Length: 326
Image (cartoon, rainbow, N blue to C red):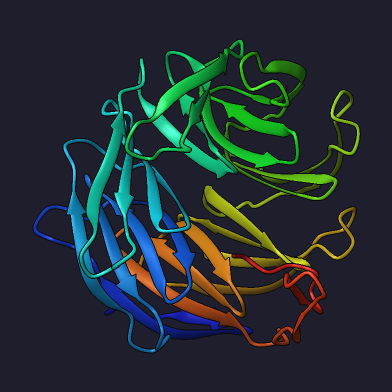
């Protein structure tokens, strides 16, 4: 493996998921002790209980590209290109079993699961809302078609935030799942590539201009509050946890920004893995980064403090960060 160069970031471990000419990673989602990696046409499941020794334990092969994955409960929901939405039962991560399939009208590119619905960016239909209450019998509930072809999306509260293939952020009110309506469209320069929404802010990385932080506290009037320009390489993904934004991209690899003041993001750590960073997810104190050579790396920001976890009277987990991924 090539030399890894890090600043205020510990490089803990890496596993190669390449199989022959299968090397292109697209997405990663981490739940409990497993990372679910979209690679080529496959979903690779990696045990990450020991950050120094991540190990692939199983793999699901599909007929088309696996672009994006969400894992909720015992199911993994995959945006599976022209095959549509594929559901995998991962109750036993070492023996995953296909549970359902819904053929969307176009290419399923991005997926976000919330409650009984999966929200899907589909190149032909726009934002599709699919009822997943019975994962074995998925059915379409409604759709909304933005002006341009949808790309990545994130769901927060009663809104879906969809970036399109050109320069736009579309905010869609999904409270009426049968007839979701576009609330606002906000132009973002530089070819939007990924989005993550937390609280009042949407964090959007673009291929050419870096990170934009958009105030969406009023979904009808989104406004830019900060722009952090990345001059080396093209960002590919962003994940936000606590007061940090974790960004991956080619050339620069992996970067951490302190966003405790959203109006003034600051670079606090970076790492250049063997190859470019294609995507990132964060769970607890660890960042899970997929790269352009079919690998999954586990990193840790040196100055991060583990959260103190407590259980409130309703039995829900709370932390000193105010955030925990379930």
